[in-house]
Image (cartoon, rainbow, N blue to C red):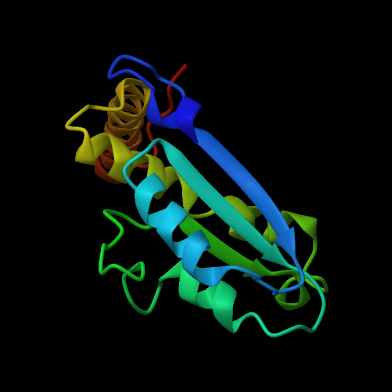
Length: 153
């Protein structure tokens, strides 16, 4: 945790950890404390629940219903945990499982950058490029609407 915490403002490393669990959490209060502290760091945790266990504690860490809070009343500055129950995706295929496992990480990364008042450079470059491509596609469609029989040779 110290290495992640000591990332300087110019450090561009973002950490993602994948935890595979049967649902048991042997020290929930310590886990909450650590996750609340890490919510201000470049970090995301993906919890993959396997088996038919009780994942209610993991759902609490996921904090989709309520902001994660430790025993001292400190709250997480952003959502950094994603819980995925393997059982819900085992019949759908690996692609769907992978999409769900990593689905929240991009937003969590952007939330971290916004929190630090830093612009995610590559992300904005890609978005700008996508907008230009969409504009070009729209222009081509408009041309075809005006004269659908005209051919470009």
